[in-house]
Image (cartoon, rainbow, N blue to C red):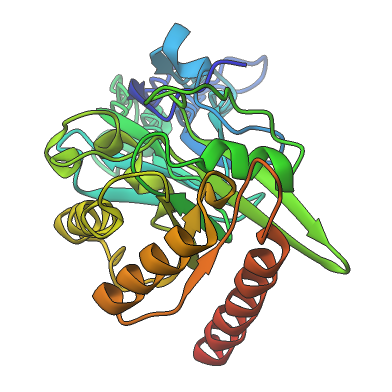
Length: 338
């Protein structure tokens, strides 16, 4: 299925139905009064987070959603039927933004969560509501209130435990393919990954979800390359795995470029706990591995793990380090909620 992580859609809730002008006309009822019923309420526009979806591709082919209008009122004080709602089913992790792309109207973070975005208009009153001591036979009714309308953006931010970041061709897709059943495209050129991928990793009794996003380049936060579009997918992760290509000439510069883009993008990415991995060590001599790992550790002030996704060398210790940090983050989050 083709991946789409944002879409713009037009929404309109249903108008309220008009009220009815009617009078009671029955045998032996000499002066039947007004009995016009009220109009029905228009349908709402509802967004619901559901399982089994990981893309917004459905909203590429349909961008307009209009709920049903409420039914007309009728005689004998019968109210009109309520208009049918329109429910937009979206993946968990979808944000609904106003047309300015900044104001968050709804954040769908849990399966089954439902939010009414636009309420249908109220139905108009029938003529029985306009009866008074001076007007016993009103011929007046309400037309019904109009519904609401607006353009909104749907933006998907994948919910994962860990996010893979790094420059293009750092080996992120290879790593994901060997630790999970995800099968991203892998090739020896930059920007092989054009859309985020999720992989579920099972290690013993532990499960974690890892998100692989397209590689970042300098200026990604300004829209250069592909990274600006997809940085949002690591906003919800608990920990980052930063892979650095060990075969590169300057591993410290490669690390600093990505960290600079995370800092420029904001939204708390630079504050997330980070595990640094020197990747592609199968192509390096032991001396080169030690030299580049030491340079990275000195520049970052953090320990550096060495691995090779292609040969699985050092992969398991990295996964256990991820699991430990994720468990700590979950426990901290649970403590904050309490």
